[in-house]
Image 1 (cartoon, rainbow, N blue to C red):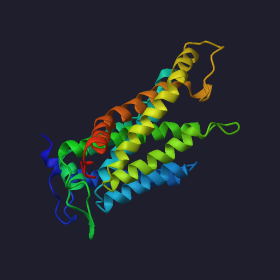
Image 2 (image 1 turned 60 degrees about the vertical axis):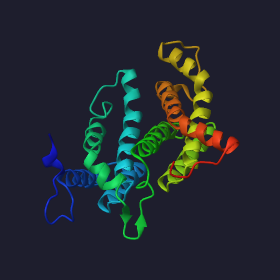
Image 3 (image 1 turned 135 degrees about the horizontal axis):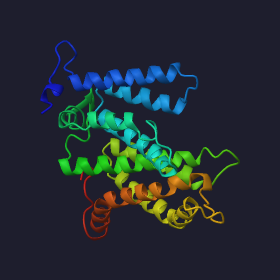
Image 4 (image 1 turned 135 degrees about the vertical axis):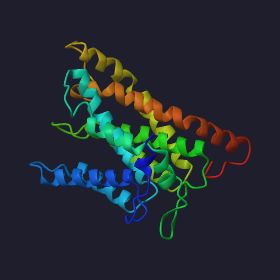
Amino acid sequence: MLRWFDATIPHTGGRSLRELTILGGGVALCTYEVTGHHVDVGNLCVYAGATLAFALRFFLARAIGVGACLGAIAQQWPHLRLGEVDLATLAVLPVVTMILLCSRDLVERFDRAPQALPGVPNPWAGFTMAQTRTVRWSCYAAGALGGLLDHTLQHPVGVGPLWPRAAMIGIIVAIALLGLGRAIGLVMVWAIGLAVAIRLIPDVLAAERVLAGDQGAKVELYTWLAHDVLPMFVLAAAAALIAAPFTLRLLRRALFGAAPAASE
């Protein structure tokens, strides 16, 4: 129905109208961030990096963009539980951007393109569609989890527990390995997701009591983040579940036979 949106526009280096729309939006978002009264350096780096990757037609650019949108949604939608309903907490811009990015045409132009940049092969090009989907969604769940864990590093008083920072670093390393086509990244996503989910189980129960108005309930992961705890648990569990089938196959073959190749 929207084939015209994916038609190649002449004199644009082979880009489609959809690509040009996304690039224009990325440039506008970076400009808005720079000219605002308060510049969020972290957000600006994410926006600028995603836009640059898209402009260079790097094979991970579409996946990075979707991951950034899911991370923004994961950070905003929990506020709806507090009754904060506006364009920001509804995450209207990330939702619209993600809809634009979720295109079969862009998957073929980026995720499954044989070459990312001149002289830089795409390690995902040899994956099956199912393998690519597993890699992408494990990255999305882990990346969105990392976005919420980032909130735990912004506590207004003192220094919080160290495990959220360690989990974030592990997530970054795992996603980087998956971007290079390394299977061990999926095992890391599974291990981190499982560890975080188990660690959050007692906090989920306490957080729900806080949100229900129980003045005596305390959340080790900060009471002020009570609305984020359940979403964090869900994302951690999702990351572990998505990566679990591959991890189990890897362990089975490592114990009873040859280990699978990195692209499996």
